[in-house]
Image (cartoon, rainbow, N blue to C red; front, top):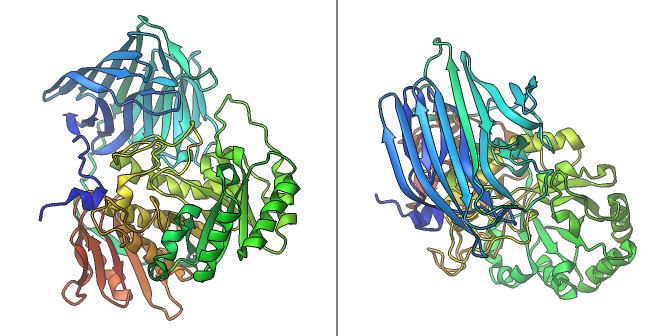
Length: 635
C-alpha cells in the first residue's frame, strides 16, 4: 500500500533524505549541510553537529547549499559545500564547509563564514548536541579556554543555567572501552541543558549568552570555526545490535491514579465548540481550561462565551488568567472576579500568571519589572476565595525552572512544553519525548508532592517567550516556533500525544492538557485538512483514549524500545486493563504484546493510515505490526 504522507504529517512536503556517511565503526547522517545521529559501532555518540545562523528573534535561517560534493571511501568520507543566508534587510552571509571522517574514529567539521555586508545575528556558529539517554548524570571531563581540565558530571536534574562555560573540549564515555572527545576551536563555547525546552540533548554552542545580542558580523571579516571529534576505542568493545526485532510490550506494577484530561478553550473557539457538543461529549475531557488574557482584549464577552460552554458541557473548569500587573493587583483581580460573576461563569479553579512572565529571561539579561509573586497570589486568593488557586508558568518549564514560584501559596503548580523551540524536523519532535521524564523529575525535585498540572502542550507554539511573536506558517511547513504545525493534523500528532502521556504520567499529575477542542490546536478538522471539516482528526482518538483512562490505576507497562513504541496502561475499578500503544517512528514496527493481551479484556484496535481496524485476538494473539505513527488500543 502506498503511504499517503498527508495522512501521516498533514503535509506532502518531504523532509530531506539523510545521506549515511560511514567509515569503519563511525557513521553519521548528513542532512541539509549538517550532521545528525553520529554513531560509533551503532551507539549514538553525538546527536548533532550543526552550523547554525539565527536572526534577532532566534529564528533559524535555512541556507541554500551549492557546490555540494560527497565522497565515500572504505576508510573515510568527506563532504564539502557552500551556502548563503540572506537577512530581511538585504544583508548576506556566505560560508564554506568541509566535513571529514575516518575509520580510526576522527571526525572534523570546519566552516569559514564571510559576511558580504554587515550581518546582524543572535548566533552564528556551531551547536553540538550530546544525547541524554544513558548520559544524564554521567562523568565528563571538561577542558576550559584557560587550559584548566575539570572532571565533573552532566547534570541529572535539569540545570536552569549553563552547567559549563568557557569550554574548549568535553570528553565522555560512549560505552565501556569507548570514549569521545569533542574539541571546539574558533570562539568561546558554553553548554546549556536543552531539556529545559524538552529537547533531548545537552547543547554546546558558540558565543556566551552573557555577551550582547543581537550582534553584528562586520562585512569582509572571515570567521572560522572547527569541531573535531576523536573517538578512542580500546579494541575490546563490540558493535551494538540493530533494533529490527519486535518491540515487546509487557504489563508492570500498579501505581497511582492516571490524571484527568483537559482541553484548552480559547474565547474565539467557543462558538465552534458549542456547535459540536456531541463530539465534545464523545471526547470526554474531565476539565475545560478556559483561557483569558486581558492584554489581548479579553473581557466580559470572553467570559460570557466561556460561561455558555461551561453551562452546556458538564466538566470541571479552570480559568487560565493572565494578570496584566499594570496597576493595583487587588483592583485588577477583583475586576476579573466581578466579571466572572456577571458572566455567570462557574469555576472550580483559577491559575494566574503575570503577563511579563511569559517572556523568557536568558542568562545575562535583566529580569523585567514584575510585582512579587507572593503579592500576585495573595490578591488572587482574595479575589477568588473558596476555589483552588494555581500558578507556575503559562510558558514552558524553562521559565519555571529559572523563576521558581512560591508554591506554598498555591494549590497546584502548572507549566507547558513545546517541542519546536529549537528544531522542527520530525526526528527532533519525536525525540523531545525523551526529555519529558527529566522535566517531571526536576519539577518534583523543586516542588515536592505539590499537585502538578502540565499543559496545554502542543506541537505548535501558542506563544513565543524567546522573541517578539510566534512564526506565522500559512503554507504549513515544518518551522521552529511556528503558531501552526501541519503534523497536528496527521497521525504524527496522535502518536506524539500518546507518547507524551506515557512519559509524564509516572509523575502523578492531576491534570494533563494536550490539545484544544476546536481551532488550530484542536482535535477537529479545519478547512484544508485531508478530512471533512469538523470531523475528528487522528489526535481526537488519542485524546479520547487518554480521557477514558482518567482515574484508573496506572499500570507501569514496559516497552522494550521506547524510541520505537510508547505504551500507557490503566486498570479500571473492575480490574480490566486497557493499554494504548504508539509507533513513534516513520516505519512499520512489529509488536509482541502477548503478555499484555493476555491480561487485557477485549480486542486490539489500530488507527493507522488505513483508518481504524480491529484485530481478532484469537487469530493475532498479541503479535501484530503497527504502521508508521499508528496508535493502538488493547482491551
